Each structure stands twice: as structure tokens, then as C-alpha cells.
Length: 418
Image 1 (spheres, rainbow, N blue to C red):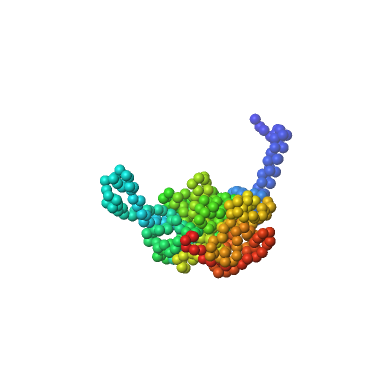
Image 2: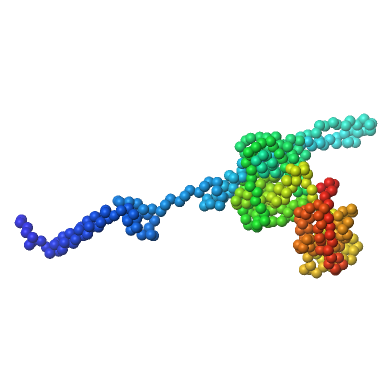
């Protein structure tokens, strides 16, 4: 069949015309884009687009810079791992060995056996002293081998072996022990050792992160984490009343063998030394503030012993109930304080003590020390502990309802009271 243009349907003609116009516009646009430079093409990409791929080029957001592995405070969320990586090499295991007198059996004191011997013929068993071994933790303060640990870890030790995380072992010399604060120092002969970075407890607050590193139950380099539960726990509250420390309380797991290890903040700085757990509690641990531990350690390294300022008073927190009790026990007639009265009540003054020489008496209520209010016995203890032996401390007291100031010069704590 012969098909002429006249025979095309009118609709088909319109479609052909539209295609011609479309192809022409597309060809024109392609030719225009192909003549653009890459910079001009990038300018055409909308700002909101994160990436655009064409046959010509690809425009994308720049790749973020990688975070430095050992840099704390960056974008890496695993700050605990970073803190441990920084401090872990400076945490050591301390194996101590001490001589303990063997307890003689009481079999020969049994009347059944004694009747076979005269009094002077009863055999006396000669049992050798036994060696007691224990394991604790510690951390390196300086690159030349100064190590901080707990007194109860090395006290009475015959030998001390120090093991680093990398497996190196050193014979350690106990350079000093202070049972009052449970702080001890050990020296090993080495150089260029990894050392910890010390922090501060000045801005510490409950709820902040706490990281503990140590060797609990013989499991070396164990890491636990939690929060700071409380600050300023007294020795009485912790259950070791013979110590003069205001403890940091944490719920980071602390088990036997952790003693002497560091407590870290979220920046990997040492804020305390783990030292005690309570057998009757779950999830409670305690650490000596690093300021206290470092102050005692400096004295021990310098002289082999630590000096503690001492007033020679026994005290309790002021309350109507306590005053009434003291009145009954000591046959005194102290005025019963009001409920809102604050202070520390002196209930005992040791003979020949600085307190007695200064004129302090039973029944005196300490209100301030050097202008700072005191409310509890630990407040007084802390103020005295940070003073210097022989310096003057001005105590504002209330006696018989009248305020007065008494100057006291702390002396060194007697050895028999430590």
C-alpha cells in the first residue's frame, strides 16, 4: 500500500513534533553541561544534598578526620578503654611475704596429758614461724620506680615482688609504711617506667564516673567501672576507726587484691587509691583521696615515716542526746543545746597533750578552727591533719554559754596511739 504524508493521522503528527522538540532540548542541555568545568558543576549541586553521582563527576561530604587513639576527650565514646590504656601499664601487682608466728597447739595443756608429766617436764613444742603470702596492687608514681600502695598490703613483709603488666618483675624495697592512713611506698630499681597522671578531688561530685584497676583475687589487670557514690566518708563509717582518712565511696567493684590500685576519673587521672571493702555490704568500695595518699607518700620517701599532727582530744558530734549522756556518765551539768546548735563536743582530754596544755576541757564545744566552721569530728580531724606540727591553730569554742578562742599547737602523734 502506498502511504503518503497526507494519509498520516493528525494525532501521530503531533507526537512526532513533540519528540522532535524534546530531543532538541535534551541535546542542547547535554552539550551545555559537557562544556562546564568541574567547579561549575559542583556549584549546581544543592546544599542540602549529601552526595550526587552523575556520568560526569561525584560530589560528596569530606571524610571526617580519624580520632587519635590515645587522645581522651575526643569523639571516641569508649573513654573507659582509653583511660585504662593510658594508666594500665603503670598498675603493678605486689606479692608480699611476711613472717607470722605459728600458734602452738594446746594439746599439752589438756589435763589428761599433763597428769603424766611434772610441771617442769611438760614439753614445749618448738614450731617454726610460718610464712604468709598475700597479693595486692599498686601504681607507679615516677619513672624511676616510686610505687604507691596500701600499708596493709606490705606491712611486716619480708620480701616484696613487683610485677608490671608487661611481665617484667622487680625486687621491691618497702621504703615506708603509715598505718594511720593505710599508705605505704615501695621502691624498685628501674628507669623509664610508665607512670600515672595524678588528678584532683577538689571538683569531684557524686554521680561522676569512677574506674578501678587492680589484681582482685589474683586476676591481674582487672578493670571495673561505676560512679562516685559519696565523698568524705569517715573512718568510723567505713568500719576502720583507727584510720585518719576521709574516704571516697564508689560502686565500682573492689575485691581482695584491689587494695593499693588506682581509682580513676573519666580522663584517666588518678583520684584515689582503692583501700577497703565492707564485708557486710554489696557494691560498696572505698578509696583514699589522692591528695592524702600523695602527701603521706612524699613524707615516707623522704624520711621513712609520716608525722601526724595531734591535739589529744576525744570528741563527738553535738546533740541533745549526746550531751545528756555525757552529763550522766561524767556527772557534769552541761547545758543541753538547742536542736539547731552545731559544733563538736569534747568528751575527753588526754594528759600531757597539746589540748590539755592549751586549756581545753571536757564539755567545750568547738565551733570553728581558723575561722572555718566545724560540725562533725571528721571536720576537726581533717583540719588538724592538714596543719603543721608546732604551728598555732585557733579554736573558737563555747564554754558555759560563752564563746572564746583558744590557741593550740599540735604535736606529733605518739607512736603508741598509731
